Amino acid sequence: MTATRIDGKAFAARLRTEIGAHVGSLKADHGITPGLAVVLVGEDPASQVYVRSKGKQTVEVGMKSFEHKLPADTSEEALLTLVGQLNADPAVNGILVQLPLPGHIDSDLVINAIDPAKDVDGFHISNVGLLGTGQKAMVPCTPLGCLMMLRDHHGSLSGLNAVVVGRSNIVGKPMAQLLLNDSCTVTIAHSRTRDIEDVTRRADIVVAAVGRPEMVTGDWIKPGATVIDVGINRIDDGLKEDETPKTRLVGDCHFDSCAEVAGAITPVPGGVGPMTIACLLANTLTATTRANGLPEPVGLTP
Ligand code: GUN
Image (cartoon, rainbow, N blue to C red; front, top):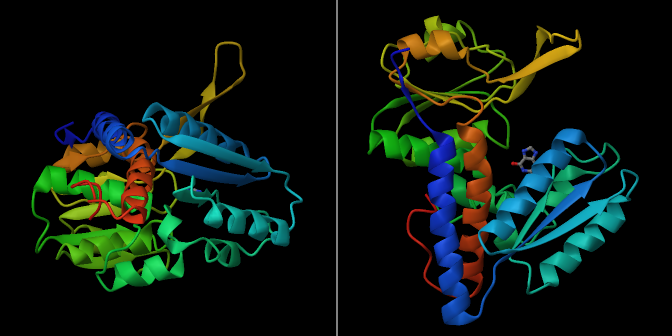
């Protein structure tokens, strides 16, 4: 391996310490405790793990955590009623409705019912529009975490060629927008892109967010480029000694071959993943300071 390993776990730990210090000052100086409400509908195991982890880290930085776990057959109307109550609750500064929602619920309707000022996911159309026009927005957590690591590694991103692989509303599109706002030349590649490896080979920065295990291999990467791997995929990995199946987590990039060529790379696990929750806490703090007309902490927003 020749690439520098970008340690998202350590970066996220530093960020949480910084957030914890700001939360302490908010309490001491203004008697304010930021509150984050997380809503989970149904029993998707991966979502349950995320929600537990979010709740734990929220409390660790000194914020209040409100968890709402609703059965899978919750009606759209009941969910909208809950969102309305959270919008009106002054103890709640941030609201996150865990996706995906069950099929009978219109996700766009629910997301757009959240008060944009409390939309710590940055998915509300108002926040998407604000980000798209370079105005002050709530910014989606995963792309924000990627941007922080890229700025930390490169300093200025101005003029760099960036290729985002994947066009989701949660990662690909807002990531491209953030890189554009930082004056990168941005290409979004996706499943229909022709000769995709020729596109990525021109990039100084590759952000892979497609959800396909180890799709990006070393021959897709320009020597010295920075690779940010957003993927978290669990794959089969043979059998244990007792012959039960073994699994392992991999990214959207084939780590070993990419690390041979890249200048820097984020590992999976321990790269982008921990930054996502740290940025959720950062957004909750930002929402709290904005709601109270207080100065925003520096470095937690783009
Ligand atoms: N499901 C997977 N990622 C996310 C996320 O960033 N926010 C929400 N609300 N749901 C998700």
